[in-house]
Image 1 (cartoon, protein in one colour):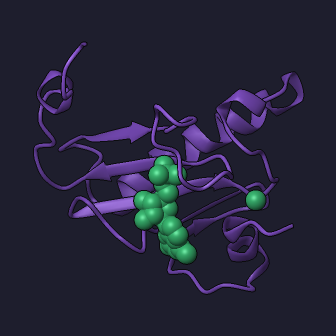
Image 2 (spheres, rainbow, N blue to C red):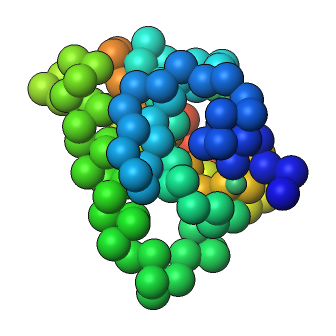
Length: 119
Ligand code: 5GP
Ligand code: ZN
């Protein structure tokens, strides 16, 4: 399968790993948009949030647990962070392997402040 995140899981593409277990991988974003910006992915290929099945619900919990652990490891647990999933065209999803962005290390601004408009 021609999926860059599956290639990162398999070691066919390099990444800077932050945390790994048998189900989840956390690695540095190649193009960070905050002082801390890592990606949390399931090792299993799931294309997007729309494709999460009943059998994947425990895995979603594992991703949240990994986010919590990565935030602590990266020193942003107390200062706070944002956990984001982009889904589909309006969500600006560009890589179709499910992932969360974990972002922090500075004040990220209120969500209303980054929303272009409601029209
Ligand atoms: P999306 O826009 O799909 O929510 O986010 C995809 C993210 O993956 C982007 O922030 C982009 O910088 C990151 N990304 C794309 N290709 C690579 C890669 O080959 N390695 C790493 N580490 N990050 C990547
Ligand atoms: Zn994949």
